[in-house]
Amino acid sequence: MHEEARFSASVDDCSDKRRRRCRKAVANGETFPAFSAEHSSAAGQTSSASGLPALHGIVDSARNADLRWPDFTAYKTEVAKLYETNGYSLLWVQNGRVRPQGQAVITLLQNADAKGLDTEDYDGSRWQSRLLKLGQRNLDQKPSEQELASFDTALTVSAMRYIRAIHCGRVNPKEFKFQLDMGGEQLPLAEFIQTQVVNAGDPAAEIQKLEPPFMGYRKLLALLPVYEGYAKRADEPKLPAVTKTVRPGQPYAGVARLGQFLQVIGDIPAGAQLNPNATLYDGALVEGVKHYQDRHGETPTGDLDARTINELNTPPAVRIRQIKLTLERWRWIPHSFPQPPVVVNLPEYRVRAMNPDGSVAFYKNVIIGKAYGHKSPVFEKDIQYVVFRPYWEVTPSIQRGEIVPHILKDPNYIAKHNFEVVTPKGEVVTDNQVSPEVLEGIRSLHLMVRQKPGDTNSLGLVKIIFPNPENVYLHGTDAPGLFSQDVRDFSHGCVRVENPADLVAWVLRNNPGWDLERVKATMNGEKNNLQVNLVTRIPVLIVYGTATVNEENQIRFFDDIYGYDADLDKALAAVYR
Image (cartoon, rainbow, N blue to C red; front, side):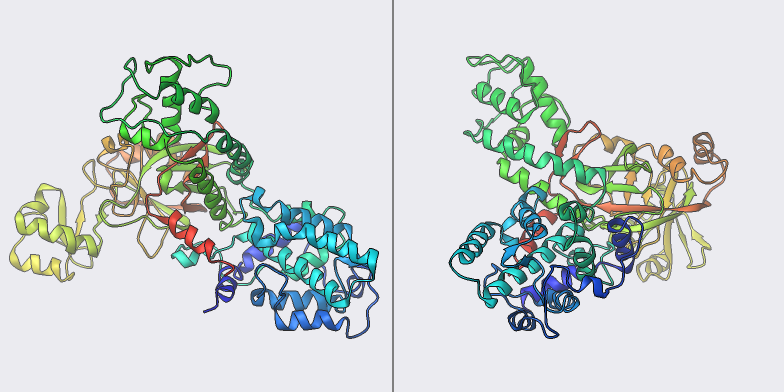
């Protein structure tokens, strides 16, 4: 399959819901006007019924040899629609000169890297020579129809690629089996350019409205040039490796280099005085390392161990790439929600409850899946109900792969761990020693295993349900000590929440009477398996970003725990090829 065609499948599917959001965002609450005669000469061209033959030729072939990526099959329908609306006259060139709107769009394309995109995907370095050539041709002789058509369509195609990229990304998340809202109708590119760009007083501002509106996206985007500046100043030899942990007050051969790096990267204040001849690791260096460790998902001990040195020696280009990949993933997310969402960021091991204005109401640490061979999924769903003091209904894969082997070793395993064996109707078969006949029923899945409610239940005292094929949910835990670990991937795919009562009260905030006090009382009450349906469903997003900006406006980086950054990097490298 041609990669440009694959790209079409990747980005053509912005849903009908996304289409309506786009229209609202770019038209200030108004739907796009229908195409009309007043739009047919947007560039001030005088055109015949058939228009310029050279334009027809390029559009019909869906190929412009002057583009870095000549084949624009993925955009042929939208390009044709746009030129048909304008009678196949030039959009961006008038009387042989580029219109102000065209100049503004070219400037955007030349600065695409400021959005975390690859400028060359939009012919960034080629526009200056094209403009010079067009100007020179006007001085020497009138540009040919073919030259004008080539320039005009190159700008149209590049603009469409850029607009779609900043609005809903360059790669479809479904390529990675992520269940995010990218299906359905494509973004109406021809309509948008026709009504919002070609005759706009400020085309850049109109296009910017298509970007994700989230504070997390904007903060990360604002810190991209800052971190690129750090990278230019931090290109120095690596810090010496350590065979044994260096603790505060001990000598370290890389003290001077460490101080310089931490000051450049912002973990030590710029005005702090550092001794260039120091040999002991102490004082401001220790505080700077603690700050750095916290930003990179480590416990801020201040100790220089092998992991911390390895993090410090990670090339700045890697960090910049993490930022750009996370920006891409932000673009996959719906641009608005009916209610403020709950957002879980897997590499960060953190869940956030969001305020209506996009700020963070509060956050909690979480435990996610991986260590047991079950990754937590990436998706958007709706929280529908909460269950207090729940049973843990063991999934078939865990029942066969883990419970059965435990019973084979110890027939009393069920009783010891507060489980019970039930029929598909929920009738209890046994909560004691398992007979060979019952074991066979468990193995064949004719009988099911569940854990009784209570303090020893693996789900803790509450679970938050958003129905999904993976049967994943948010819940408490009977092992709170695991939250002290830096790497918290101990679940079977579900997301365990530290001290979940606050989150449950927030989720139930629209249910009259369900305040924090009542939530805690119900969690510690006597009624088991109590389901409370939400009056208002709450969106929940499980996302994957290895670079974030925290509530203190500090950039933080995390390990690519599932290898998704590497996968996305490969997909982006092939996106236009």
